[in-house]
Image 1 (cartoon, rainbow, N blue to C red):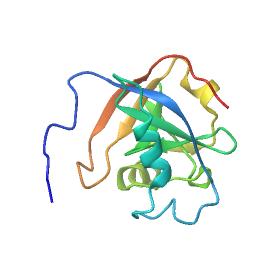
Image 2 (image 1 turned 60 degrees about the horizontal axis):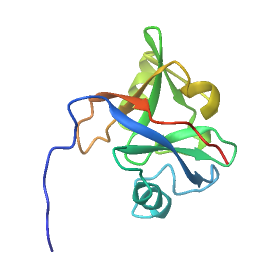
Image 3 (image 1 turned 45 degrees about the vertical axis):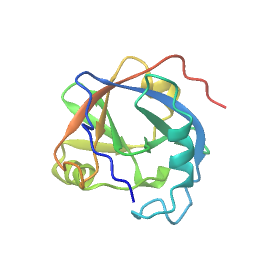
Image 4 (image 1 turned 120 degrees about the horizontal axis):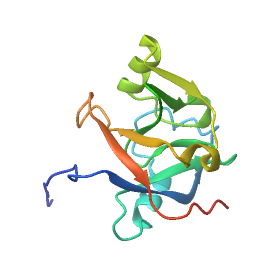
Length: 144
């Protein structure tokens, strides 16, 4: 077994793009941290050069999450995050923000949500449960 280590976080905002890989919102494995990650692996394998992560959408073009993190859109002092029904791993910080009122869940589509808002990713608990990283959408969003 080979193990490689290195810094996870770039110094500036992460560049994201909208993946052509779609999640099935009814997939019973999406809310569970599991090794069944074929869609996530395919999206990461297709990342354009210079892009650190991909936003995954479901079959209705609703934002779900990135390949490694929950996603938040900042509106003023408030954070919006997709409803669990969109198909995603709920995440510890995401659930805490919803419970405390710091965040609000909602269904939103990629075209309306990505324009003109700060995009934030929350790393999974195994990395840092309190880390929110700023990111920006890279290039045009081409929705299938």
